Image 1: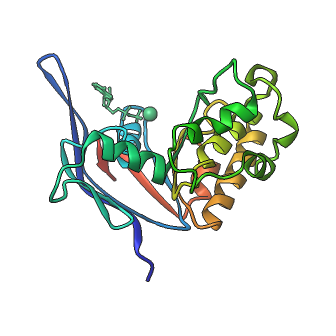
Image 2 (image 1 turned 180 degrees about the vertical axis):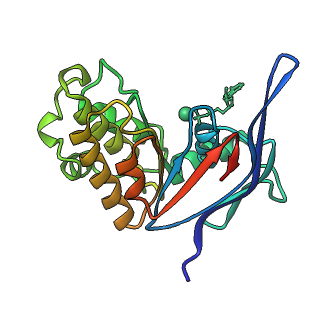
Length: 225
Ligand code: ADP
Ligand code: MG
């Protein structure tokens, strides 16, 4: 059996809004292995983004543990420093969001290269030409994001997520801004990344995308149902 790429146990997250407490996650356990595509589904406000952010070390849980690739990230014997977390984010994860978040004044190639500019060691960095070819956007290399369709913008964002050779791709509603044909294309791309050995975890409202996943975790009020 393969080692789980990531294992989360009993994750809870309590946000404070003034004197009010919001229990965004309430004892969620979750596992995903390399080569797997997992989908997180559930109604708005059920905790999907909170879970994805904690898995991706963009937010910390109030309680519970998270380990990725055998490394204890949260709830382990020792608390990681912000510097160690930053290193883990760059080395392990590629992030994809619904709204792409491309820099409008940079070309497609420059947007894709941006995360590698912050990576001191170039050991893990891929060539931008290789990732652009993989995503079928090599002909757009010199274009600005404003000159692209939504589907192309999301492919640029996925290429950017791949530039540092991540082990895990995290995608929060990656097709939320796309029509059904582009959604199908993004589905195929994410599937291919899993086939190449990455772990793909996506939050989605899209049934077609969720059906393509190897495992589905459904949340309601911060709990797995
Ligand atoms: P989803 O992605 O499923 O729509 P979220 O994870 O964004 O759900 O939110 C889960 C719950 O936590 C919601 O009730 C939301 O209002 C609350 N929440 C999310 N982020 C914060 C925050 N930074 N501060 C306070 N409450 C938050
Ligand atoms: Mg969300």
